[in-house]
Image (cartoon, rainbow, N blue to C red; front, side):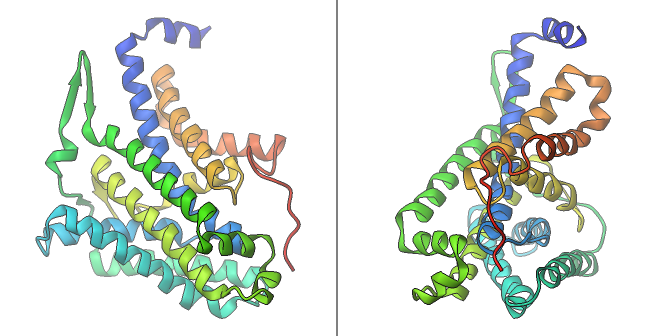
Length: 306
């Protein structure tokens, strides 16, 4: 009854406002979740440092604009490239030496890489919160009737769709994508067939980190506060989004991201008294998915690679 009353009291303009915010947040979750799902799809491991790569991308963009006074559009391009290189560096230093080690060793290395990035950022950039520089073009307010929308909220879903289309084209219609799919199906057979495993895994990390950088830039514009622990909660939610959609499935990660983003915003819209518990929504969804469909919405049953 409470839900129906909340819907009845909500105006069309207010509902449209919440829908735009939900789609915007879901798009951000989707972009970051893709990085988790790509790495898992190939290596069957969770890259726990992915959330901190998002945080580092925010700092790259922040200092590029404020300290080096590089134009924002060049800074964003440089941030994407630098973040992709950071992802490859982490893969080569923390994961590649353990390629044939037990899964637990790789998991511990991933957690160690995450803590290293957080503490390194805390040491270099200090723990003082910093405000992401304002980009007038993206921070402006667009008024449509009685709805006021920040331009970045409209920009985020468009960028997400473009990035998703490019990624699906790479995965489904290029030789590199074919090699990625081969490695994800059978690691050893792909090696025997002449696929350069190390290069394919590095490319996977580079693409996932580049998408994380795009998400980080838009996250910084939408939610300007930057700290060394910026990526912790978004990272957890994006990991949950990947699991909800079916980890290892790119489209599933996008669907999971939208489910979490829309759910969070609509819970606050319909039940304002529970706004302090919005973060709990992601974990409730995770529990329900693991209980009723452990492989995720688009996931398939797989056997673990030995």
